[in-house]
Image 1 (tube, helix red, strand yellow):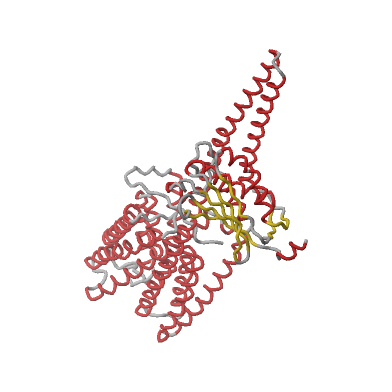
Image 2 (cartoon, rainbow, N blue to C red; image 1 turned 90 degrees about the vertical axis):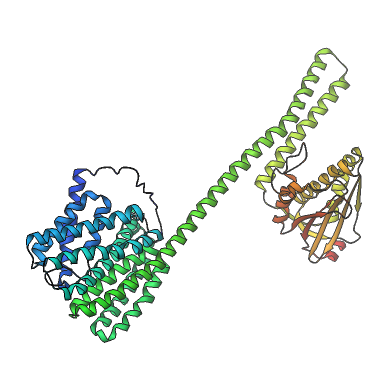
Length: 551
């Protein structure tokens, strides 16, 4: 059970709102009238006689919610207020006064609803910090304006004297502010839970039980505080419980907990026959509790929502990067394979023409040998890309690193000589024993040596291979005196498809880094002392040298 999911629905005030179907209008109106009368029957016990003003007015929160759905419900709100006065509040005023005062009340709630919806962007479908800011900015001021209009109309009609105006206004303001401040967030929380069907999830049982237990404990503290008005300070012990719920379950969780505690407070006040003066103090404490808890809960919910959205964005970026890499790999493969395949086709075609023309077998054999070489080249390209993508499992064996370097040195000797590059290998006197996948390390070292030879052929004539020892392992360094690393790709040197070679794929160094990491090693580079660059492959030493030398 999580109370942090936020669904932000954008509101476009400049677009006309669709009309409400008659069936929906009638259904919502009926539900509102039933809820309005039920709430007033409960809260009328603390109403100022002859006015219907109470210190907690959740029904007015329902009125604002209904009008936020559509201003067409304003007449229904007016009707509910008039019926309440006639059958519940029993005001000492004439029918004209009732109609005038309740018209100002419906007008005030309509203004609050429009201000919340269109200017504050309050959205019952969202549990967010924006909703809290809208409530704090609109509800207290709106309740004050509505209270002045309503109490002023009752004063003008003689419903109470001038000396009671301030008390009536303060009671109205406290009741409406606390009622809307608790009811509106709770309605948004209930919508969030209903929409995402959180009660159906098995994992919701634990959090629900925890919140219920905390609320029951807080309810006991509220009853203990209300039992004796001298113990109002005990109400402060409820704050830690609300803060815990807000930090753990976000805006929705704390909003529902606050609704429970507000109802508990009203029940406790009625049970202990607390006077209006003390009740108003408790309501102010409840208002501060609500603002504090909702502020923390909204901050937690927004932070979790931002974290979730950031995770979705990262996942989307990863998917985009994967698609881009796949596309680049496909382009690179198509480009690289097209060359050997074209050459292969030419050589096979030439061999067939030589056979048809009855040319000497030697020429045909040469064409077929070249075709075989191009086929092998295409296979190497495919395997290189496959190895980069798949990596594969390591098949470790204990081996002297000098053997691998010796083999790579011999394999690249002819290539270096053909490019007029002097390839030198400073063979270490002592063994450097490592536990590695022989084929993978051979491929990594060969990538470094081949790159160095290509670089030396462009701007220098020398490549040096050295095997050195460092604490805990060995390092193969390959130094060339070529033009060095292009500054434009220096920061992206080990990224796939980054290369300055006309015929390069940009997979050699990324593959080498992947191999090094799978062996718990590393690869890095630095500029050469005079020219060129030095690439170093470091590997861990797994066996003692002596045991390997004796073997």
